[in-house]
Image (tube, rainbow, N blue to C red; front, side, top):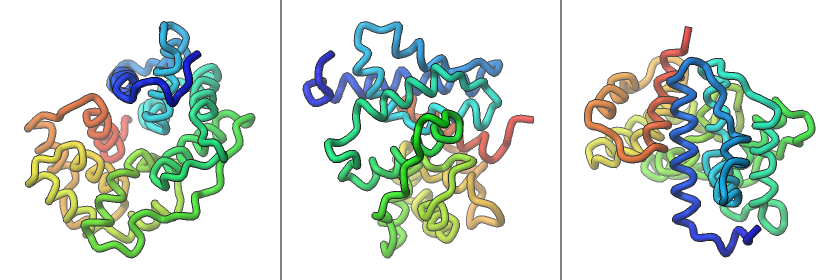
Length: 231
């Protein structure tokens, strides 16, 4: 198998888009599993598929958490393999955003696969002490943490930052930055209580104007299920 360093990033991005479409189909479908294990096994390029699992990360659990789809042991084993394959040399990514996204994936893994240890929350707190622009930008990059079950200092920061998130969402929508808008509305859909703006109205607006890319579509689908759970 080639090294993670030698494989082109574009290949990883394409593989992540394919996986996002698979997760999106499971969210919208009749309750089927994502079949992550088959996604990795039935390919001539397993490295890219493992990279995609690392990129999509905690969102691969969304159909189970939000739509009641089954989560099979072989699927959690594949996600665990992805985290192991792309672990930084010292065991902890230097990029705090990557570290937090890996934390979220490992946390969900530990809840469903006792053999996979949870990671301690990273020491760095992206967005802390920033103005609303910096805070909303940081939380947009941490949108994969906006899922049920997860809780951390990042979630506490989001709960205190409804106004900043709303301002960031409005700015992104005015700039037609749909990927950022989708990530921010996802946080707003997770937050309890009254909010500075109606996240469902923002979701409807984004759906009406179309979205670019499978991962943005996945963010929007997750956001809607956070606000309008499957019954």
